[in-house]
Amino acid sequence: MKKELTEFEEKIKELKKKRNAIILVHNYQLPEVQDVADFRGDSLELSRIAAKTDAKVIVFCGVHFMAETASILSPDKKVIMPDVSSGCPMANMITAQDLRRLKKEHPQAVAVGYVNTSAEVKAELDYCCTSTNAVAVVNAIVKEEIIFVPDKYLADYVSKQTQRKLIAWNGFCPTHVKILPEDIKREKKFHPFAKVMVHPECLPQVVASADAVLSTSKMCRFAKETEAKEIIVGTEVGLIYRLKQDNPTKEFYPATERAVCPNMKRTTQEKILWALEELKEEVRVSDDIRLRARKAIDRMLAIV
Ligand code: CIZ
Ligand code: SF4
Image (cartoon, rainbow, N blue to C red):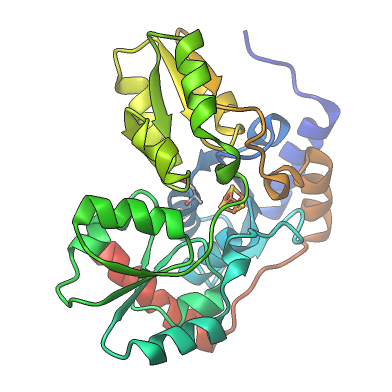
């Protein structure tokens, strides 16, 4: 049975039409935010939709670098965030100046950066990548020396998968490192028939204990396609709401309830309504940075 719309949901629907807006929602957002989404997805899926849509306004419910990426790919649209203070602590662990210094220390190296970086950092990269395509991007690079920023655990995973030595930065996701090897062990004991899928931002010991290491978009696909009826999920807990809706006959267990990204939980229906009313806060990237950052994203898109 279809749920009746709440008062906020009715108003959001009305205003969305009036403003010619669409609401893009990251897989880690609160259930109440996922409930008003036109599309849910990972950062790249959402940016691709932002680039394709006819809507004039994109309400981006996620963290700051994701709204920037959407704006880089669709500069003619107005990208707004309901809570512009939602940042990604991992993205904030490296600045453009840090990366320039690292490149100077390794002048022959190709610079690859995770999508979890500011637009300014992306402007210094040769290639962008996401957790979906990081292995493919590194495999496509012929030159010997590769810088990989900012996530040291994603770098470790990619290095093992590609047999390439990577010059990694010391960044990490404070949410994913809360998932511990003992959490996986405990959940496996409770659910002996469950498959374990984890995100490559997790600790190497957690990654080593998983049946599958996947980005959130790939987790959504894996959950649908696997024969398993039970899945232990090693990523930010917000994804479980969507997994359950998409797969009502399967059971999903968070590896730990502690894996919560506070920045992803700042957005609420109330803030979405304000954002649509005021058309704020806009996220825009200056032309100079945008064009340089775009090159790194386009080089990634040419590979995958
Ligand atoms: O790219 C994204 O959306 C992130 C940060 C995570 C994921 O795996 O979806
Ligand atoms: Fe950043 Fe981690 Fe939050 Fe993702 S879950 S937005 S990587 S802090």
